[in-house]
Image 1 (cartoon, one colour):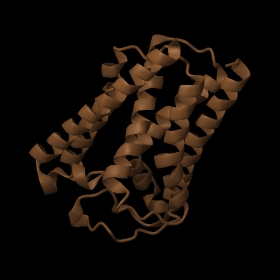
Image 2 (cartoon, one colour):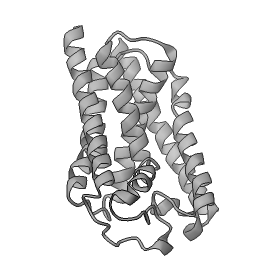
Image 3 (cartoon, helix red, strand yellow):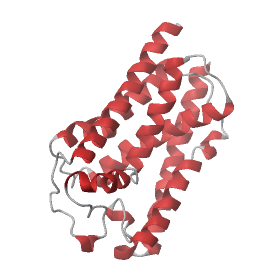
Image 4 (cartoon, one colour):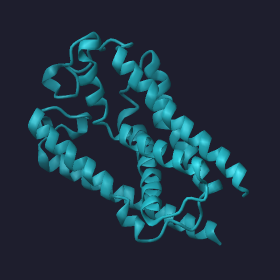
Length: 224
């Protein structure tokens, strides 16, 4: 594939990731969608910030506690860098690119399996939800398969791509222990206890590793 075409694809991918993220953040800052009352304070979920601009910082802080936000931001940054320089190389950059690919894929899979059935996005969240959980993941996978860069998902990255996701899980547990709030119901240690939550996290990591192996295998085939 020529550089100009790859650059356009990287740009579309980056734009989708930034768009979904920014729609969600503007909605949070301006509180364009009022709380729907599904989560009471006793449910230990994120929330509880003051209404209006007075609670904007708290809502934005909470929004950056979601795995969805981490994965979309990582894709947005790495694909922007690839758009600026489609020939960009570097071990650290390749690791970040591969990590973003895994995380955004797991975002789509986990949302579909664990959250979509009970989710009820309203207003602008309908748009951000569509981009962050479906369109950006699909575009990212397709762009990686079509434009690559190819041959840069080594076997070692099937392990290294979990550095940031595991860091996220550690942060979520530490923040939850301190503030007694969690981003997702299934991570609620107060409700379910550490054995259940840690087991679930382990299962997610195992499932994610299968996905990483698939990307490694596809990368090897595509590089030929």
